[in-house]
Length: 427
Image (cartoon, rainbow, N blue to C red; front, side, top):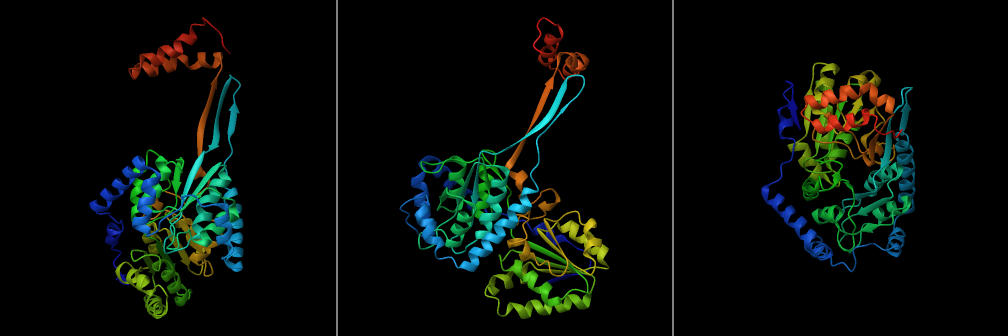
């Protein structure tokens, strides 16, 4: 891991992963072909990229049932627990519509409504992420979205991973398609003969999925343009070096570009963590990936004190932040920019990934400065409600007309003045 002791955060400028023009052009080609050829393009690209020839794009209820039979009972129990906690947490986020009436005949309010349809993309192919199904779909269901579509690439056996289908079954998803990559994003955005388009696409994916989401944004809403995973740990000497090292590795194993960062005022503690990282890497199944991330992206930032540690972290704006200090509650009010904040020694980041309840689809690449984790509000929209009586309009009509004419919009002024003439009443 690279040591930084002078507060130099120049590495943040290199954090964003820039795609080569070749990749962008490839994604645009895929999207255009899906728009023109529909299902045929999906079958073509699934064969080309996944090495799978599909009989059909939609996953049948019988196939879901058969796949779920292969999921171990302890995993099904974990999925059920996770789904319960995620739903309970997100139900607390649900905002209410409101309406306010004044004595002079004005009604103002806000009507909250859910999106009609959402597509949840779940990565797959060589991996299995049932947690991504739960995190992407449950907030949409809580919000009241009536059509939640699951789409995920098939494995080499020609089927979506059984664990993904088990998570879908647990929360009642029935519209499931076995398509991945940029072609899946295009299908969700523009539709094909089999797949109807959706209003919003959420969920993580590889570089090509991210580029495809970027291309279709505007024609359809998206959650974010997610980058590699990040974790920052503020720690003092009260923390356990082995535990902190394990948490850094928990994110490093995601991707070679994942960014694990330790921020501490203690030289001795930092050295112990670095030793533990090397020790624990030896028998980590994904040690090649984690080791690459630790070596090329990992940082140890030594600070003068915990206040400087907080200042550094607020500049990093990490996806995940652990406060592994003696008094995490004292630091919490000072944290301004972090996607998810884990307090205390036992709040390991994987707790948030799986069972705590808050969403694990969290802003990356410093976007926690202005963005929030996926939540119920991500699937809602607000409509302003306005009603004026004749008397209320007379009170403000002249001001409206003056404002409109000052902006050069005579038609706006006349629209109000027509009503002020009193030629007809429609109260």
